[in-house]
Image 1 (cartoon, one colour):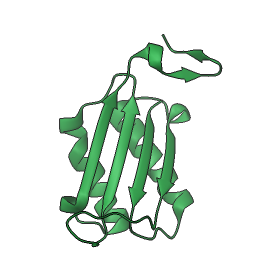
Image 2: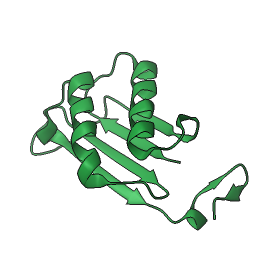
Image 3: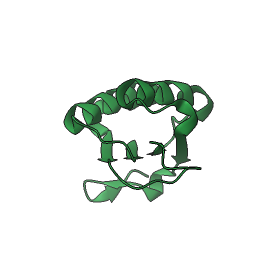
Length: 110
């Protein structure tokens, strides 16, 4: 926790580097240790968003520390810079979960 899931219709050449960089970004935005950030990417998937132009959907989940109004632009800018997807082709879903609904190492955080 936090967790970021990136789905994009674009082809990502260096997935390992992108995952590391987005983990660092999410860690800094949430002020949570990078050690606990999990990131996943699915590229080249079919996404229709008015047309078939490359687009991106990001799901971000965490226990607290989400500030969507402050995080949306830095994340969108990151996606644009790293994948070339315009920010008007990006959706981001933020989900703040209670500690009792998130487990690690065999037990919940709360």
